[in-house]
Length: 92
Image 1 (tube, rainbow, N blue to C red):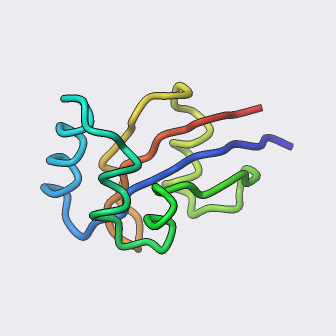
Image 2: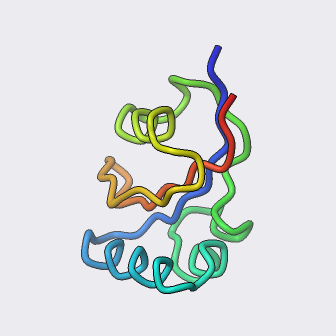
Image 3: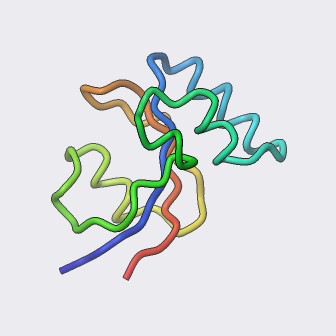
């Protein structure tokens, strides 16, 4: 069974998601922005979702986590919860 570790930032608009992605690309820390902006309780821990198996997350999220390069910041990814930036921190 495939396992991954990821962190994410959940916001309510695609524009906000793109703005945060640009800020990360310009050197701001993912975990700092997650703490400040993420609507998910995981924001308090820098967006860290811990380890989970394939199929545990909603399909749109799952697809990105199990296909993106480890360390890349992907998004906006739209789910029923809002818009996510996702960084895969480990997969094995």
